[in-house]
Image (cartoon, rainbow, N blue to C red; front, side, top):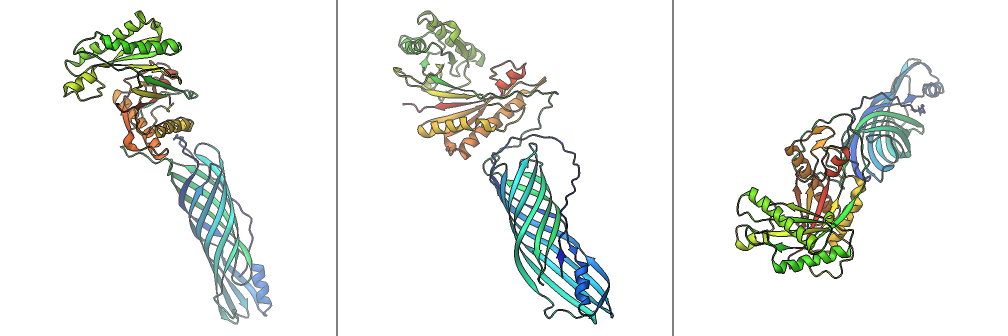
Amino acid sequence: MKLSRTSLSLGVAAVAICTSSFAAADDSFWYMGGNIGQSRAKIDDARIASQLLGTGLTTTSIANDDSHLAYKLFGGYQLNKNFALEASYFDLGQFGYTATTVPAGTLNGNIKLKGVGMDVLGILPLTQQFSAFARVGMNYAQAKDTFSNSGVVAVPANPSPSKNGLNYKAGLGLQYDVTKAFGLRAEAERYRIDDAVGNKGDINMFSLGLVYRFDEKKPAPVQKAAPAPVAEAAPIFVIVPVIKMQRYCSILDIQFEIKQDEIQREEKEKLAVVGTFMNKYPDTTAVIEGHTDNVGTSEFNLKLSLRRAEAVVSYLVDTLHIAPARLSAVGYGEAHPIADNSTREGQQMNRRIDAVIACATDVAGLKVAPARMTMALEMDFDPNKTEIQPQYYGELHEVANFMKANPEVTAAVEGHSSNMVGKVHVSPEKSMEISSLRANKVMDYLVEKEGISRSRLSAEAYGRTRRVAYGTTLEGQQENRRVNIIFNYPKK
Protein backbone atom coordinates (compact mmCIF):
# COMPACT_ATOMS: atom_id res chain seq x y z
CA MET A 1 0.00 0.00 0.00
CA LYS A 2 1.35 3.46 -0.96
CA LEU A 3 0.65 6.62 1.12
CA SER A 4 1.63 9.83 -0.70
CA ARG A 5 2.18 13.40 0.56
CA THR A 6 -0.59 15.90 1.01
CA SER A 7 -0.23 19.59 1.75
CA LEU A 8 -0.36 20.50 5.43
CA SER A 9 -3.14 22.94 6.34
CA LEU A 10 -4.63 24.30 9.53
CA GLY A 11 -8.02 26.02 9.77
CA VAL A 12 -8.21 28.35 12.74
CA ALA A 13 -11.63 29.14 14.25
CA ALA A 14 -12.26 32.46 15.98
CA VAL A 15 -12.63 32.01 19.73
CA ALA A 16 -14.40 34.43 22.10
CA ILE A 17 -12.07 34.91 25.04
CA CYS A 18 -13.01 36.26 28.48
CA THR A 19 -9.94 38.13 29.61
CA SER A 20 -8.60 37.33 33.04
CA SER A 21 -5.27 37.90 34.71
CA PHE A 22 -3.00 35.85 36.85
CA ALA A 23 0.53 36.46 37.99
CA ALA A 24 3.26 35.36 35.67
CA ALA A 25 4.99 32.32 36.99
CA ASP A 26 8.55 31.31 36.46
CA ASP A 27 9.08 30.42 32.78
CA SER A 28 10.37 26.86 33.34
CA PHE A 29 8.12 23.98 34.39
CA TRP A 30 7.01 20.39 33.63
CA TYR A 31 3.72 19.72 31.90
CA MET A 32 1.62 16.88 30.46
CA GLY A 33 -1.52 16.48 28.41
CA GLY A 34 -3.40 14.74 25.64
CA ASN A 35 -4.90 15.49 22.21
CA ILE A 36 -7.68 13.83 20.23
CA GLY A 37 -8.72 14.50 16.66
CA GLN A 38 -8.65 13.14 13.12
CA SER A 39 -5.83 11.76 11.02
CA ARG A 40 -5.87 11.89 7.22
CA ALA A 41 -3.91 10.14 4.46
CA LYS A 42 -4.08 10.25 0.67
CA ILE A 43 -4.17 6.78 -0.88
CA ASP A 44 -2.17 6.60 -4.10
CA ASP A 45 -4.88 5.05 -6.31
CA ALA A 46 -2.84 5.40 -9.48
CA ARG A 47 0.01 3.30 -8.10
CA ILE A 48 -2.35 0.61 -6.84
CA ALA A 49 -4.03 0.38 -10.28
CA SER A 50 -0.61 0.25 -11.97
CA GLN A 51 0.56 -2.61 -9.75
CA LEU A 52 -2.63 -4.59 -10.46
CA LEU A 53 -2.32 -3.92 -14.20
CA GLY A 54 1.18 -5.39 -14.05
CA THR A 55 -0.40 -8.69 -12.98
CA GLY A 56 -2.90 -8.62 -15.86
CA LEU A 57 -5.83 -7.14 -13.94
CA THR A 58 -7.77 -4.00 -14.80
CA THR A 59 -8.99 -1.89 -11.90
CA THR A 60 -12.61 -0.84 -12.25
CA SER A 61 -12.94 1.05 -8.91
CA ILE A 62 -11.09 1.83 -5.67
CA ALA A 63 -12.88 2.66 -2.41
CA ASN A 64 -10.63 4.45 0.11
CA ASP A 65 -10.78 4.73 3.91
CA ASP A 66 -8.43 7.72 4.26
CA SER A 67 -9.36 9.24 7.68
CA HIS A 68 -9.56 7.88 11.20
CA LEU A 69 -9.82 8.86 14.88
CA ALA A 70 -6.35 9.66 16.26
CA TYR A 71 -4.91 10.66 19.62
CA LYS A 72 -1.66 11.33 21.43
CA LEU A 73 -0.42 11.60 25.01
CA PHE A 74 2.48 13.89 25.75
CA GLY A 75 4.72 15.27 28.48
CA GLY A 76 7.35 17.96 28.34
CA TYR A 77 9.54 20.51 30.00
CA GLN A 78 9.35 24.20 29.11
CA LEU A 79 12.87 25.60 29.30
CA ASN A 80 11.79 29.24 29.10
CA LYS A 81 8.99 31.27 27.56
CA ASN A 82 10.19 30.53 24.01
CA PHE A 83 11.38 26.90 24.01
CA ALA A 84 10.22 23.49 25.24
CA LEU A 85 11.10 19.81 24.82
CA GLU A 86 8.22 17.36 24.40
CA ALA A 87 7.90 13.56 24.19
CA SER A 88 4.72 11.81 22.99
CA TYR A 89 2.99 8.53 22.29
CA PHE A 90 0.65 8.65 19.27
CA ASP A 91 -1.90 6.39 17.60
CA LEU A 92 -2.81 7.59 14.11
CA GLY A 93 -5.45 4.92 13.58
CA GLN A 94 -6.09 2.72 10.52
CA PHE A 95 -6.30 3.46 6.79
CA GLY A 96 -7.17 1.21 3.88
CA TYR A 97 -8.61 0.62 0.42
CA THR A 98 -10.60 -1.93 -1.56
CA ALA A 99 -9.77 -2.30 -5.29
CA THR A 100 -12.21 -4.09 -7.62
CA THR A 101 -10.81 -5.68 -10.80
CA VAL A 102 -11.65 -7.36 -14.11
CA PRO A 103 -11.41 -10.37 -14.33
CA ALA A 104 -13.56 -10.39 -11.18
CA GLY A 105 -11.70 -9.99 -7.95
CA THR A 106 -10.88 -7.62 -5.09
CA LEU A 107 -7.76 -6.58 -3.19
CA ASN A 108 -8.09 -5.18 0.34
CA GLY A 109 -5.18 -3.34 1.99
CA ASN A 110 -5.02 -1.84 5.51
CA ILE A 111 -2.34 -0.17 7.63
CA LYS A 112 -2.28 0.62 11.39
CA LEU A 113 0.14 3.25 12.66
CA LYS A 114 1.34 4.11 16.17
CA GLY A 115 4.61 5.14 17.80
CA VAL A 116 6.53 7.67 19.89
CA GLY A 117 7.90 11.12 19.11
CA MET A 118 10.37 13.68 20.45
CA ASP A 119 10.01 17.36 19.50
CA VAL A 120 11.53 20.77 20.07
CA LEU A 121 8.87 23.49 20.39
CA GLY A 122 9.38 27.14 19.54
CA ILE A 123 6.82 29.29 21.40
CA LEU A 124 5.65 32.82 20.55
CA PRO A 125 3.60 34.46 23.35
CA LEU A 126 0.91 36.65 21.79
CA THR A 127 -0.80 37.83 24.98
CA GLN A 128 -0.54 36.88 28.64
CA GLN A 129 -2.71 33.80 27.94
CA PHE A 130 -2.51 33.22 24.19
CA SER A 131 0.53 31.77 22.39
CA ALA A 132 1.43 30.20 19.06
CA PHE A 133 3.96 27.42 18.67
CA ALA A 134 5.73 25.37 16.03
CA ARG A 135 7.28 21.94 16.50
CA VAL A 136 9.88 19.89 14.69
CA GLY A 137 11.22 16.50 15.72
CA MET A 138 11.47 12.78 15.06
CA ASN A 139 8.96 9.96 15.24
CA TYR A 140 9.57 6.24 15.58
CA ALA A 141 6.46 4.55 14.20
CA GLN A 142 5.32 0.95 13.80
CA ALA A 143 3.37 0.16 10.60
CA LYS A 144 1.32 -3.02 10.45
CA ASP A 145 -0.09 -3.87 6.99
CA THR A 146 -2.67 -6.54 6.19
CA PHE A 147 -3.78 -7.70 2.75
CA SER A 148 -6.71 -9.91 1.75
CA ASN A 149 -8.21 -10.86 -1.57
CA SER A 150 -11.07 -12.49 -3.45
CA GLY A 151 -11.46 -13.90 -6.93
CA VAL A 152 -8.48 -13.85 -9.26
CA VAL A 153 -6.47 -11.27 -7.31
CA ALA A 154 -3.35 -12.60 -5.58
CA VAL A 155 -1.95 -11.26 -2.28
CA PRO A 156 1.73 -10.86 -1.36
CA ALA A 157 3.63 -13.86 -0.03
CA ASN A 158 3.49 -12.24 3.44
CA PRO A 159 -0.07 -10.94 3.90
CA SER A 160 0.66 -9.30 7.28
CA PRO A 161 4.00 -7.46 7.05
CA SER A 162 5.13 -4.89 9.66
CA LYS A 163 7.95 -2.37 9.90
CA ASN A 164 9.39 0.13 12.39
CA GLY A 165 10.86 3.32 10.99
CA LEU A 166 12.46 6.59 12.17
CA ASN A 167 11.30 9.73 10.33
CA TYR A 168 10.65 13.43 10.83
CA LYS A 169 7.55 15.12 12.15
CA ALA A 170 6.47 18.78 12.29
CA GLY A 171 3.50 20.88 13.28
CA LEU A 172 1.88 24.19 14.17
CA GLY A 173 -0.48 25.08 17.01
CA LEU A 174 -2.17 27.61 19.25
CA GLN A 175 -2.52 27.46 23.03
CA TYR A 176 -4.89 29.36 25.33
CA ASP A 177 -4.17 29.23 29.09
CA VAL A 178 -7.56 29.09 30.80
CA THR A 179 -5.95 29.19 34.25
CA LYS A 180 -2.43 29.15 35.61
CA ALA A 181 -2.45 25.32 35.51
CA PHE A 182 -4.73 24.37 32.60
CA GLY A 183 -4.52 25.23 28.91
CA LEU A 184 -6.28 24.35 25.63
CA ARG A 185 -4.47 23.45 22.41
CA ALA A 186 -5.41 23.32 18.71
CA GLU A 187 -2.79 21.60 16.52
CA ALA A 188 -1.98 20.42 13.01
CA GLU A 189 0.88 17.91 12.64
CA ARG A 190 2.52 15.95 9.84
CA TYR A 191 4.07 12.52 10.43
CA ARG A 192 6.40 11.05 7.83
CA ILE A 193 5.74 7.30 7.77
CA ASP A 194 7.25 4.12 6.26
CA ASP A 195 4.67 1.47 5.36
CA ALA A 196 5.59 -2.21 5.51
CA VAL A 197 6.01 -2.78 1.75
CA GLY A 198 8.73 -0.26 0.92
CA ASN A 199 6.80 3.00 0.48
CA LYS A 200 6.88 6.35 2.30
CA GLY A 201 4.05 8.78 2.90
CA ASP A 202 2.69 11.54 5.11
CA ILE A 203 -0.11 11.35 7.67
CA ASN A 204 -1.68 14.63 8.80
CA MET A 205 -3.27 14.88 12.25
CA PHE A 206 -5.66 17.68 13.27
CA SER A 207 -6.51 17.70 16.98
CA LEU A 208 -7.64 19.54 20.11
CA GLY A 209 -6.08 18.94 23.50
CA LEU A 210 -5.67 19.79 27.18
CA VAL A 211 -2.41 20.77 28.93
CA TYR A 212 -1.74 20.56 32.67
CA ARG A 213 1.27 22.37 34.10
CA PHE A 214 3.18 21.12 37.15
CA ASP A 215 4.35 24.51 38.39
CA GLU A 216 6.76 23.21 41.04
CA LYS A 217 8.39 26.61 41.47
CA LYS A 218 5.17 28.27 42.57
CA PRO A 219 2.89 25.83 44.36
CA ALA A 220 -0.28 27.20 45.83
CA PRO A 221 -0.11 27.70 49.61
CA VAL A 222 -2.26 25.48 51.81
CA GLN A 223 -5.05 27.79 52.82
CA LYS A 224 -8.68 28.38 52.11
CA ALA A 225 -9.56 29.84 48.74
CA ALA A 226 -9.71 33.59 48.43
CA PRO A 227 -13.25 34.99 48.39
CA ALA A 228 -14.70 36.43 45.22
CA PRO A 229 -13.12 39.82 44.45
CA VAL A 230 -14.98 42.99 45.24
CA ALA A 231 -16.45 44.59 42.16
CA GLU A 232 -14.11 47.23 40.84
CA ALA A 233 -15.03 50.53 39.31
CA ALA A 234 -14.13 50.94 35.65
CA PRO A 235 -11.84 52.08 34.34
CA ILE A 236 -8.93 51.17 36.65
CA PHE A 237 -5.76 52.89 35.55
CA VAL A 238 -2.56 50.92 35.76
CA ILE A 239 0.21 52.35 37.93
CA VAL A 240 3.69 51.32 36.90
CA PRO A 241 5.17 49.67 40.02
CA VAL A 242 8.29 51.19 41.52
CA ILE A 243 10.35 48.79 43.58
CA LYS A 244 11.15 50.37 46.93
CA MET A 245 12.97 48.79 49.80
CA GLN A 246 13.81 50.60 53.02
CA ARG A 247 15.51 49.28 56.14
CA TYR A 248 14.54 50.29 59.64
CA CYS A 249 16.37 49.58 62.88
CA SER A 250 14.82 49.46 66.32
CA ILE A 251 17.61 50.44 68.70
CA LEU A 252 15.61 51.46 71.74
CA ASP A 253 13.79 49.55 74.46
CA ILE A 254 12.55 51.79 77.27
CA GLN A 255 10.27 50.43 79.99
CA PHE A 256 7.81 52.37 82.17
CA GLU A 257 6.27 51.95 85.57
CA ILE A 258 2.62 50.93 85.80
CA LYS A 259 0.29 53.62 84.38
CA GLN A 260 3.18 56.12 84.21
CA ASP A 261 4.50 58.07 81.24
CA GLU A 262 7.54 59.71 82.91
CA ILE A 263 10.97 58.78 81.54
CA GLN A 264 13.35 57.38 84.15
CA ARG A 265 16.93 58.66 84.53
CA GLU A 266 18.60 55.46 83.33
CA GLU A 267 16.36 55.41 80.25
CA LYS A 268 17.52 58.89 79.29
CA GLU A 269 20.97 57.40 78.71
CA LYS A 270 19.45 55.15 76.06
CA LEU A 271 17.74 58.16 74.48
CA ALA A 272 21.14 59.83 74.29
CA VAL A 273 22.26 56.99 72.03
CA VAL A 274 19.30 57.68 69.74
CA GLY A 275 20.15 61.38 69.70
CA THR A 276 23.78 60.64 68.87
CA PHE A 277 22.73 58.38 66.01
CA MET A 278 20.26 60.85 64.51
CA ASN A 279 22.70 63.73 64.77
CA LYS A 280 25.36 61.65 63.05
CA TYR A 281 22.93 60.78 60.24
CA PRO A 282 20.90 63.98 59.68
CA ASP A 283 18.78 62.41 56.90
CA THR A 284 17.32 59.71 59.14
CA THR A 285 13.83 59.86 60.62
CA ALA A 286 12.29 57.96 63.53
CA VAL A 287 8.88 56.68 64.60
CA ILE A 288 8.55 56.43 68.38
CA GLU A 289 6.20 53.54 69.21
CA GLY A 290 4.44 53.40 72.57
CA HIS A 291 3.14 50.10 74.07
CA THR A 292 1.42 49.05 77.30
CA ASP A 293 0.49 45.92 79.23
CA ASN A 294 -3.16 44.83 79.48
CA VAL A 295 -3.83 46.38 82.91
CA GLY A 296 -6.76 48.77 82.54
CA THR A 297 -9.15 49.33 79.65
CA SER A 298 -8.04 49.19 76.02
CA GLU A 299 -9.07 52.82 75.52
CA PHE A 300 -7.02 53.99 78.49
CA ASN A 301 -3.99 51.95 77.39
CA LEU A 302 -4.14 53.36 73.86
CA LYS A 303 -4.04 56.92 75.20
CA LEU A 304 -1.33 56.02 77.72
CA SER A 305 0.90 54.51 75.02
CA LEU A 306 0.57 57.64 72.90
CA ARG A 307 1.46 59.87 75.90
CA ARG A 308 4.58 57.76 76.48
CA ALA A 309 5.62 58.07 72.84
CA GLU A 310 4.99 61.83 72.90
CA ALA A 311 7.06 62.16 76.07
CA VAL A 312 10.02 60.55 74.32
CA VAL A 313 9.59 62.78 71.26
CA SER A 314 9.51 65.87 73.50
CA TYR A 315 12.70 64.79 75.27
CA LEU A 316 14.51 64.18 71.95
CA VAL A 317 13.41 67.60 70.64
CA ASP A 318 13.91 69.69 73.79
CA THR A 319 17.01 68.07 75.27
CA LEU A 320 18.83 66.41 72.35
CA HIS A 321 17.84 69.02 69.77
CA ILE A 322 16.41 66.68 67.12
CA ALA A 323 14.23 68.54 64.62
CA PRO A 324 10.52 67.83 65.30
CA ALA A 325 9.92 67.12 61.59
CA ARG A 326 12.19 64.06 61.88
CA LEU A 327 10.11 62.47 64.64
CA SER A 328 6.60 61.09 64.98
CA ALA A 329 4.78 59.42 67.88
CA VAL A 330 2.43 56.44 67.59
CA GLY A 331 0.53 54.63 70.36
CA TYR A 332 -0.41 50.96 70.00
CA GLY A 333 -1.77 50.39 73.48
CA GLU A 334 -1.85 46.70 74.46
CA ALA A 335 -2.13 45.45 70.84
CA HIS A 336 1.47 44.22 70.41
CA PRO A 337 2.76 42.46 73.52
CA ILE A 338 6.23 40.91 73.43
CA ALA A 339 5.78 38.91 76.64
CA ASP A 340 3.10 37.13 78.68
CA ASN A 341 0.80 39.66 80.39
CA SER A 342 -0.20 37.04 82.99
CA THR A 343 3.12 37.56 84.80
CA ARG A 344 4.51 40.69 86.45
CA GLU A 345 7.75 40.36 84.48
CA GLY A 346 5.84 40.05 81.21
CA GLN A 347 3.74 43.10 81.96
CA GLN A 348 6.86 45.13 82.67
CA MET A 349 8.40 44.10 79.34
CA ASN A 350 5.22 45.13 77.52
CA ARG A 351 5.27 48.63 79.05
CA ARG A 352 7.86 49.90 76.59
CA ILE A 353 8.92 52.30 73.87
CA ASP A 354 10.48 51.26 70.54
CA ALA A 355 12.30 53.74 68.33
CA VAL A 356 12.01 52.63 64.73
CA ILE A 357 14.74 54.55 62.89
CA ALA A 358 15.63 54.64 59.19
CA CYS A 359 18.91 52.72 59.26
CA ALA A 360 22.24 53.77 57.83
CA THR A 361 24.70 51.04 56.89
CA ASP A 362 27.37 52.37 59.26
CA VAL A 363 26.21 51.95 62.85
CA ALA A 364 29.64 52.00 64.43
CA GLY A 365 29.67 53.48 67.89
CA LEU A 366 26.16 52.48 68.90
CA LYS A 367 26.12 51.05 72.42
CA VAL A 368 22.59 49.63 72.24
CA ALA A 369 22.26 46.55 69.99
CA PRO A 370 19.31 46.56 67.55
CA ALA A 371 16.29 44.69 68.86
CA ARG A 372 14.92 44.24 65.36
CA MET A 373 15.36 45.35 61.78
CA THR A 374 12.55 45.79 59.27
CA MET A 375 12.74 45.48 55.51
CA ALA A 376 9.74 47.46 54.32
CA LEU A 377 9.08 46.10 50.83
CA GLU A 378 6.58 48.25 48.97
CA MET A 379 5.47 45.29 46.87
CA ASP A 380 2.82 46.39 44.42
CA PHE A 381 -0.15 44.01 44.20
CA ASP A 382 -2.92 44.14 41.64
CA PRO A 383 -6.22 45.19 43.27
CA ASN A 384 -7.59 42.31 45.35
CA LYS A 385 -4.82 40.01 44.07
CA THR A 386 -2.19 38.16 46.08
CA GLU A 387 0.36 36.92 43.52
CA ILE A 388 3.95 38.15 43.88
CA GLN A 389 5.18 40.05 40.84
CA PRO A 390 8.50 38.76 39.39
CA GLN A 391 10.25 42.11 39.84
CA TYR A 392 10.28 41.51 43.62
CA TYR A 393 12.10 38.17 43.49
CA GLY A 394 15.47 39.95 43.83
CA GLU A 395 14.43 41.74 47.03
CA LEU A 396 13.09 38.52 48.54
CA HIS A 397 16.37 36.81 47.63
CA GLU A 398 18.17 39.54 49.59
CA VAL A 399 15.87 38.87 52.56
CA ALA A 400 16.77 35.18 52.38
CA ASN A 401 20.49 35.92 52.16
CA PHE A 402 20.25 38.08 55.29
CA MET A 403 18.47 35.30 57.20
CA LYS A 404 20.97 32.69 56.04
CA ALA A 405 23.84 34.91 57.18
CA ASN A 406 22.11 35.42 60.57
CA PRO A 407 20.66 32.00 61.49
CA GLU A 408 19.50 33.18 64.91
CA VAL A 409 17.15 35.77 63.40
CA THR A 410 13.43 35.10 62.87
CA ALA A 411 11.07 37.15 60.74
CA ALA A 412 7.43 38.20 60.75
CA VAL A 413 5.81 38.89 57.37
CA GLU A 414 3.15 41.60 57.68
CA GLY A 415 0.45 41.85 54.99
CA HIS A 416 -1.41 45.12 54.38
CA SER A 417 -4.14 46.18 51.99
CA SER A 418 -6.00 49.29 50.89
CA ASN A 419 -9.42 50.48 52.00
CA MET A 420 -10.43 51.23 48.42
CA VAL A 421 -10.04 49.81 44.92
CA GLY A 422 -10.54 52.63 42.49
CA LYS A 423 -13.67 54.32 43.82
CA VAL A 424 -15.08 51.19 45.45
CA HIS A 425 -14.75 50.74 49.21
CA VAL A 426 -13.36 47.44 50.50
CA SER A 427 -14.80 46.02 53.70
CA PRO A 428 -12.53 45.48 56.73
CA GLU A 429 -13.17 41.71 56.52
CA LYS A 430 -12.18 41.58 52.85
CA SER A 431 -9.07 43.69 53.49
CA MET A 432 -8.01 41.42 56.34
CA GLU A 433 -8.37 38.26 54.24
CA ILE A 434 -6.47 39.70 51.28
CA SER A 435 -3.63 40.93 53.49
CA SER A 436 -3.42 37.48 55.10
CA LEU A 437 -3.13 35.81 51.70
CA ARG A 438 -0.40 38.27 50.66
CA ALA A 439 1.64 37.65 53.80
CA ASN A 440 1.33 33.88 53.39
CA LYS A 441 2.35 34.09 49.72
CA VAL A 442 5.58 35.87 50.69
CA MET A 443 6.25 33.43 53.52
CA ASP A 444 5.68 30.43 51.22
CA TYR A 445 8.03 31.95 48.64
CA LEU A 446 10.83 32.30 51.20
CA VAL A 447 10.31 28.69 52.32
CA GLU A 448 9.84 26.99 48.96
CA LYS A 449 12.06 29.08 46.70
CA GLU A 450 14.77 30.35 49.04
CA GLY A 451 15.06 27.45 51.50
CA ILE A 452 14.26 29.35 54.72
CA SER A 453 12.89 27.12 57.48
CA ARG A 454 9.19 27.72 58.07
CA SER A 455 9.81 27.61 61.83
CA ARG A 456 11.72 30.91 61.48
CA LEU A 457 8.83 32.71 59.79
CA SER A 458 5.34 33.86 60.72
CA ALA A 459 2.62 35.60 58.72
CA GLU A 460 0.53 38.41 60.19
CA ALA A 461 -2.42 40.22 58.60
CA TYR A 462 -3.30 43.85 59.32
CA GLY A 463 -5.84 44.49 56.59
CA ARG A 464 -6.48 48.21 56.25
CA THR A 465 -5.63 49.07 59.87
CA ARG A 466 -2.14 50.44 59.15
CA ARG A 467 -2.58 52.49 56.03
CA VAL A 468 0.32 54.71 55.05
CA ALA A 469 -1.82 56.78 52.68
CA TYR A 470 -5.45 57.90 52.63
CA GLY A 471 -6.34 55.63 49.70
CA THR A 472 -8.37 58.29 47.88
CA THR A 473 -5.90 58.25 44.97
CA LEU A 474 -4.61 55.33 42.91
CA GLU A 475 -1.08 56.06 44.09
CA GLY A 476 -2.16 56.00 47.72
CA GLN A 477 -4.00 52.72 47.22
CA GLN A 478 -0.86 51.25 45.70
CA GLU A 479 1.23 52.31 48.71
CA ASN A 480 -1.24 50.61 51.07
CA ARG A 481 -0.99 47.29 49.18
CA ARG A 482 2.32 46.26 50.74
CA VAL A 483 4.25 43.70 52.74
CA ASN A 484 6.68 44.44 55.59
CA ILE A 485 9.24 41.89 56.77
CA ILE A 486 10.37 42.40 60.38
CA PHE A 487 13.54 40.68 61.57
CA ASN A 488 13.57 39.77 65.25
CA TYR A 489 16.85 39.28 67.08
CA PRO A 490 17.02 36.84 70.01
CA LYS A 491 17.13 38.34 73.47
CA LYS A 492 20.67 38.36 74.85
